[in-house]
Length: 256
Ligand SMILES: [Zn+2]
Ligand SMILES: [Zn+2]
Image (cartoon, rainbow, N blue to C red; front, top):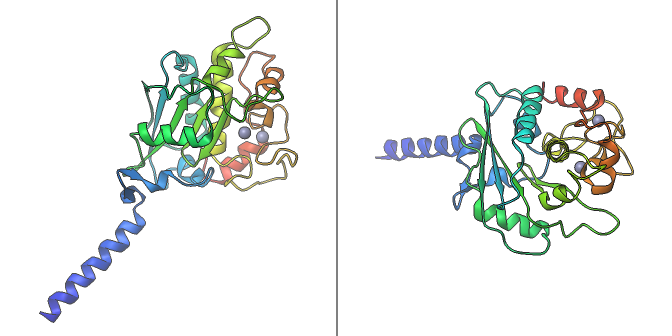
């Protein structure tokens, strides 16, 4: 009997240590707490195949604010160029109801995620949530419009209504180029840029705009997520790329 209790105890301890090591079983109320960590903290998991060999991106939008096919394909190409996911990267897109607010705080955005997100890290697949909002950020003002915000390790929001306001008119960039720039900039934050979980390999953080790159042509320049600043960056009509300093940071943290 004593022997049996010991065996059961050993088994229990083994089970506990297994579940501690396995990020995919870290569930609470149907959601994986591994997806509710700080921005940049999953950079190595997103970049490398060490813990996750595939990635699923859940894109939710309010009807009328779906991102363009060009932007989805551009994001896939960006991620395939920068990450190691031998079992593939997939995007799933669907419409969800609007909260009907005139602007969204990050608390609002977070409750939309809680009510609608269905994909969490599971097994060797890492999951990312992107919401395309039908109203502006509550942080936007006449002096600066916020086009996107990365607020957790696998979550960000694109303020698609303002993307519409800043694209597809005379002297404005095309919708897909503006979307791609903001989506990939926010994804860059999930990948730990700049100095946000992915260690700097050279000093290139913009001290006036922390967690951004100081190269004004780089995707991670601060202006790439603000309504006014981004128009200057996109005057050439193409999506900005990461500069060599940001690329070196990603490669040193398991990226491609
Ligand atoms: Zn940013
Ligand atoms: Zn850079």
